[in-house]
Each structure stands twice: as C-alpha cells, then as structure tokens.
Image 1 (cartoon, helix red, strand yellow):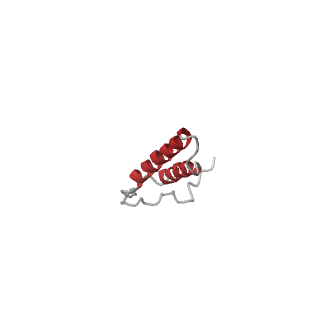
Image 2 (cartoon, one colour):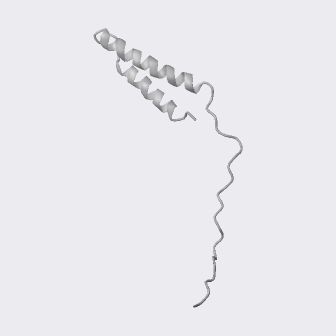
Image 3 (tube, one colour):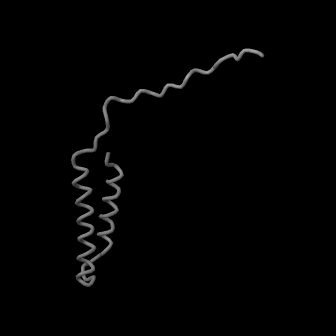
Length: 74
C-alpha cells in the first residue's frame, strides 16, 4: 500500500483580533430608550385625545428611530 503524502496546503490561521473592543457611545442608550418612550407616549396621547393632535405617524417614526439605534448598540 502506498504511503500518503500528507497535507500540501498550509493550515488556516484566523486573523488576530484587535485588542480594543468596540463600545457604544455614551449617548446611544439614553437616546434609544427616550425614542422608544416618547414614541409610545405620542401614540398613546394621539389615540386618547381622539386623534385631534396632528400626525400620529410621528410616534411610529420615533419608535423606528429607536430600533435603528438599537442595531448600533454593542
């Protein structure tokens, strides 16, 4: 039986990780939470007042903004 030749490719070594871990800016979490809360409050007040306040979609826009900020949270 013939002897196997062994491996001809080099073994994969992953690139080194950077020593500095990524951290969220300090303003991100308070801004995200406030967007969620103000958006929720805006929608609640809009429906409680019988939709007399202008533009109920502002609450949804604030919540979507909060979700967008949540994707950047590390």
